Image 1 (spheres, rainbow, N blue to C red):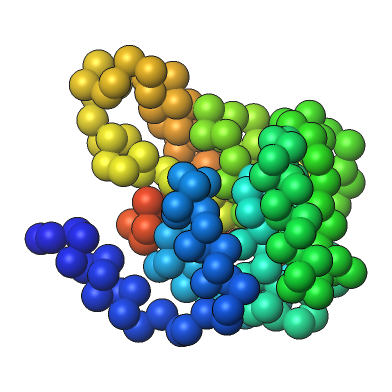
Image 2 (cartoon, rainbow, N blue to C red; image 1 turned 90 degrees about the vertical axis):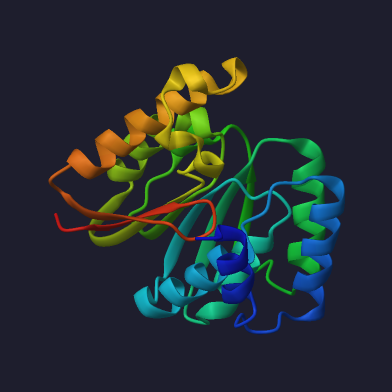
Length: 213
């Protein structure tokens, strides 16, 4: 099975994005800025429309693309708190969110996600994790504190472009710590009896969890 051909096929059915989102994607791809894949964006929009969250937490703003996608998928979102710790990306996201006319609904917070989460209160209806992969287990602990029954937690890039299925000794040395931490995260999120979780091979892989209690 040719995964690239399948991805291209799925992307062919994605709704056409507005001019701003197209520009953000083009600029991010040119500059090497991390961005959710088109099929992941499709899934995120669908989940947002289904869950109809009022309060959303996003870890890893990057250029603001995914926050803008979520805000556009359900007008009932009262606020998206999105965390970004790298100044250049923060500035880009700030400009993009302003251009989208969403400064009243998207709250851009500068700071390390692990530390900043500790100052938040919630409860959030939906949490989207897409920040430093080595911190995923820590993010999950805080996400559980910041959510309640009925909340949804989504985490991106859990397949590491396929490397997650390999032994850590077959992974590039620089990626071994991330490999270990993502495996730890997967054990934690699937083993938590407060959550019902699925691993879904869309984009670079996501976990989709619904909190039962």
